[in-house]
Length: 234
Image 1 (cartoon, rainbow, N blue to C red):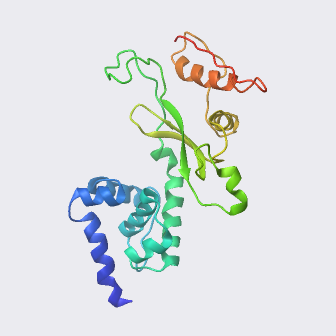
Image 2 (image 1 turned 90 degrees about the horizontal axis):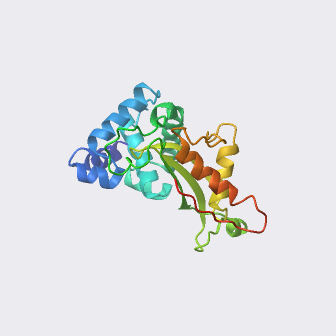
């Protein structure tokens, strides 16, 4: 065990203690952001170091896996730990991140009339933007048909909602890749703790744009056997 400690320390040192470029390439964030994230997970989320794995290393393991879709067998060699240790600390950090969702997921605010941002000033009252994306996964042979998308890839269809700063305010994952975007959106709206959108479209409301776009998407699915496309001017 003692013979592995220098290798473990050296690998983490190469990632976070030299230059920002290496840290961004490996963990998808700067050294400053990484340090702040570790402090947040420790003081607000209750993440604790163990005898052999520090908090910084736990967070680095977690970010390395989710940033590059690395497998356990690859990460355990990079950080010189057993696969069981990697799995335990990955799930420990994941549970803390989920516990901190009120902090990490900001509340959306409508765009004000005096907005000067050239990207958003045309969308007064809009709460943000939503879109679906496909994330590649591995499933059993029996399930591949359900998870195969229109491009032939095996994936899940994930819905994400971002505010004007590009920060996620809502995420729904788990639908098969064969599921239509409108079906995923309807599920997000109909869930008890899902995406909250008003059904009524008051034209005088400051939130009319987001509500209007979502309602139009639902309408295209309600006519059985026919996909109706309508164009509106907002």
